Length: 245
Image (cartoon, rainbow, N blue to C red; front, side, top):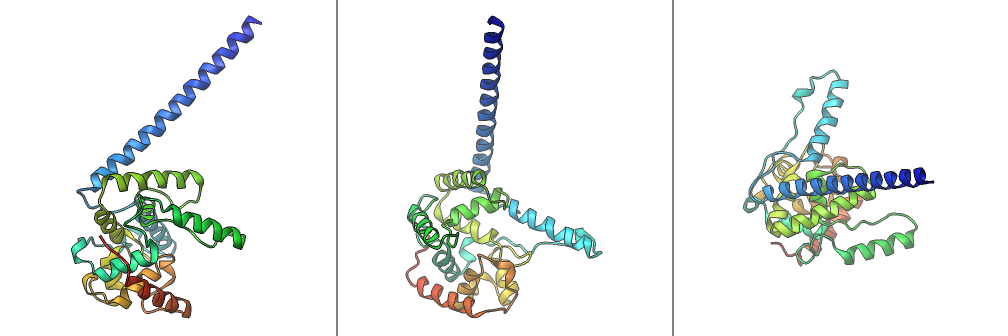
């Protein structure tokens, strides 16, 4: 009997040690993310986790086609916030996150609307990710869909909002967002799709770039569909009331 009690106590101590070690590991990961976020306050990232993953995919595809993987490059050039057209800033906020200046990383009103809409349709037809959440995912996380990844995304979004200005968050997002196959950031998007620079984008061009953000690799330069045209018109209307930092 005493031996059983001793074994139970040993098992309990082991379980406690494992839980403690797990909690410590989680905290260390969060501190690492926080350190990276603080670094972003004054530094521009040359790449992101999502960009690295896409480059790896493109290089694997090139290798299968008999090409040298190292010849594959992403189209990406950093451009300061002030050199990006206000039209693009308004278009992206109008299309992706109308309450960007009001929420603290998560838009609970949008989440409630999305849940209600999805329940009525019986399937997932709407999401509620904010620009800050999308930035968190693009910077640090994989594209897998899981509750753990979503929870980590929310934590990083809170870190971004707590340490960076809305202007800096939008600047980062506009410079790392995907706008085509191997095309990242406003500079590359403006050049590839319209042969211009991001400061010269018209309202319609900006609305088109915002419209393709959910599925950017589906739309090559000059490509359009009736749905995309309708989406562009909706964004153009919403841009009139969109506020930017």
